[in-house]
Image 1 (spheres, rainbow, N blue to C red):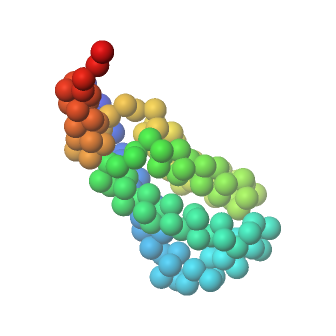
Image 2: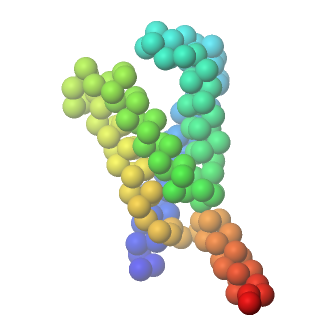
Length: 136
């Protein structure tokens, strides 16, 4: 059980770092360029901001283990979008990295817990508070 949690923690942190760095890159390279790219795909420009913020804030949250399941689902959706909107025509070797990130995201959405995640502390505190609640 502990081995599984440690493995999930490794996946969580690596996935978080990758997405965080991609979010940072979108802002450092000029978010206007990313907006233009999204618009060239036929997407509204504001979706570039949404994706960049999910990657940036979600990546940091993933590293810390906050909202892991929700962030993982958002990451998987971003990867599905990247594959279908941008990379599908590039063949397998154009999408393999995106497939790996999507698969890691799906695995973390399924896994219940990972080692050293703040979600564990928050859920433990919530459960402790529930234990002390007055019920009739």
